Length: 211
Image 1 (cartoon, one colour):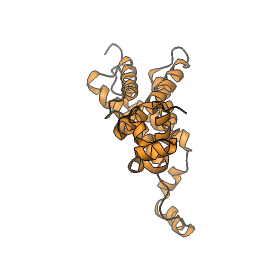
Image 2 (tube, rainbow, N blue to C red; image 1 turned 90 degrees about the horizontal axis):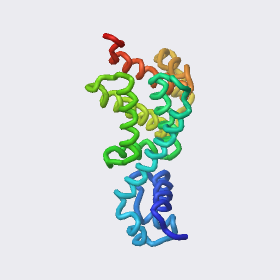
Image 3 (cartoon, one colour; image 1 turned 90 degrees about the vertical axis):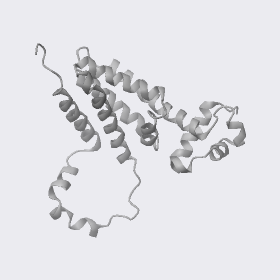
């Protein structure tokens, strides 16, 4: 099958999922494709360029998913609903890829068009809501960092040593509030509540109409 940039990105993401950033190499990608490493460089000039393309794909998929979610909102939905739609679809898009959170975290530094589009739309949503200009970038960056950090925890490796019943036995007495809180919600509900809390905080920056 003919080599294309898309096929190389597919293979790169598969290798990344198995081996992580440090295990990714053009040689491994070539082996997965049944090709010589040298033939990849015609389409993707370096590992750094491949990582940029991979990160951009994750961000663009998230942008497209967010566009669909925003279009599906009922007429007159508030700005918080728009933020929630963008955050939920971003999390889902990142989670589709093993190591997706790491790739997405690097995408702004790589000047990914997809990541910059996500940020621009989020800034526009906040600006239209009335968030003052001096708070826009911090508010948007806080939201994106929260989503990325949340998925990083979800995609983290399991403990090196298995947790035993003996390890857990004394924890409820020592940390009752922590354990009760941890069991209160599933991950979906917890994430939604966290985004709504951030929106509630951002809302305090918006001056009432006529103020």
